[in-house]
Length: 399
Ligand code: HEM
Image 1: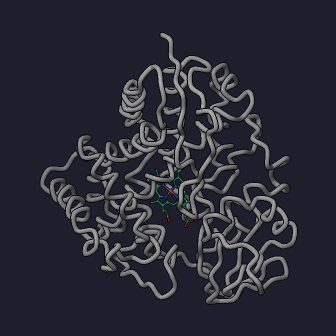
Image 2: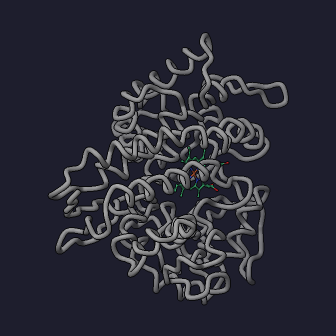
Image 3: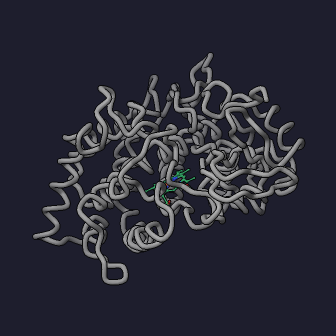
């Protein structure tokens, strides 16, 4: 069958909402070529994301044929039973309590980043605010020195942009994280080693000390999980903040509403996640023939859970293309996944978004920041992410 939609093509992935509506109406699962299935609807995405026996995560975003040793896999690349054990450690380490405890720090970083902007003139809010804030938040939770945050962000960006998530190789083709990114891996190992001798009150120490059914994470697994926490939330949360600010500037009435009604903030964040998902789909490998809406997905077939498409399923969300800050069920979106792999970083991402909005609205009076004349929204180049590459604004803050 001819290709109908290619989610791995950034241009198509970001500009195909009308086509996706048609595919959703056509069938719950469509053949998108190369033997790959794309799941279009909300109920079926949830059904398959729950089914870890029938749909494996091991291949993740990896190209066919790329096999990563188990102890070097991120949490999202593990299947049960390994996944169940490691996830319990991750979730226990990254509790809502540790996120809550980090909030005053995240608030102080948000304020400091906004204070650093000039009161008049132009700025790009992506490098100035939406990128550094999530990174600083994760670095703080892990307990790493604040001054290392820019270097950690540079390593993580290089890793993501090198194509490593698909190939497990660096730009020069060297296979493996420790081998291809030795400075980054060495830095993580050194921070873990420090905590082995001097435990601290941070997420890294918790990962090191927690045991699951009498077992602790092996050193390579620990390194993979710390890397996972750094890279899992970095660009995704940056895209969420970028999308939220873009919506604040462009959705009619949204800024006034959020200024006068703080209770609407969480719903605005969920609507942003639903309509502009920082992660647009979730890949799986079918390991057991499964019939969906009259179509059989065969063992061995690759399947893409089209969560961005499912987030606009009219069966669940009325007027689904509209940004509706009063939508009661907005948090039913699938942007953080669903089932056993549901994003454990969701509470952190939501807290960072709430703090960022609050700090931004407090710092700038109404109308003090607007997109530059002629601003054109350009998506970040990553095919699986939605977010503005730039947020160039004019600031007139007369206070
Ligand atoms: C807006 C921000 C974020 C979005 C949209 C997002 C999205 C996702 C999605 C869709 C999954 C499920 C993948 C699957 O089912 O295979 C996931 C898993 C995961 N996320 Fe996030 N994430 C975000 C922020 C974060 C943050 C801040 C962290 C870490 C601090 C994080 C760490 C992880 C980890 C470790 C997993 C693997 C969970 C598992 O497989 O059990 N994420 N994320």
